Length: 445
Image (cartoon, rainbow, N blue to C red; front, side):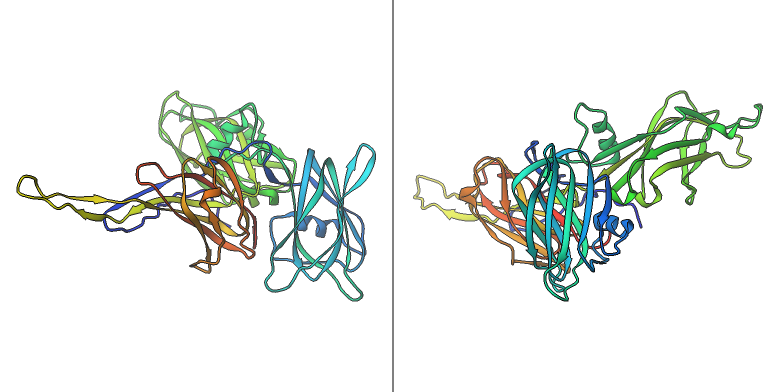
């Protein structure tokens, strides 16, 4: 699997007289009242008809391509990293089932959702959302599953937990690393510091051979790497003596290419995206080495691994903003005492915002950062199988008051992107500044 990060790409609209295109990454200002996806720390089967713990863990691994058959009444417990207000759960699978979700509280287990009969179909397969009538704050959840009738065997592919939390946009590994050092680290971010604190790799011509003891760095990961959408190693390095080409490998996977270090005493920070599947729960190793016979030497310090989990909004690959207007020419009648003038006028301008995802996703809502007046309606279009479809809902622009607005825009099926088209006055900036889709992924990790 190739590492995947946020890539920037522009989208341009051709028009008669004016084209303005810009590329940005969405940064809607969201508060702690946002509803975000919560990844459990541990999953275990407390009682079942032969369902092993390993199978239960795959129900929370961000992959909807496999099914787990529930042959009889089954109870699954999840532990969260911290007590969280749980607002909803989502199920992806086929065949109906009956589910009850309970939350552990100070007074014992309390029903959060259900018992509810969930209708899931084989085609089209889609996410089903179950909303808590009264959200509860808990550190443990219990799911009870059973067939919806005689002879029915539910087949589940994935479960998601959604609760209260802050949503922090992350553009890159460097961005995440810096945010993890801030006063409020991102809810979806994790950072694992490595030991030793520093190491010297290689040796110069007139020095004793390199001591390999400090060429390897270790860090411990407290969860399954399947939880991570993206991951990076971050470290500081300095070249000593002359140019260095250093190789490094993670958990004995194929060595990564060399890093160029010019001679000097200035340390520089390196951020390298890695495949999360290279990581493992527990101990992880990053090995550095200088090329054989190179007679080079370099230093590494403060190595850490930073990783990002899904929060329900970070499937974004590209987002492009474009504006276009078509001139209308107005003629002015004149006589011999005045000159003839033709002045281009335009009462509206068309705005288009295009977002594409790094994997198919079923959109539930759009969070819009409204900064101006929208004229008329906002058309929502879905990208399905490489083509834009007009099957999306229409948003009444008059309802979009200035501020952060959450609008229900269910796609009902997995899509690869969303496009918004709307009109505004040409005298002001684009009235919708940012867009954040809230969605659930479909397909492999």
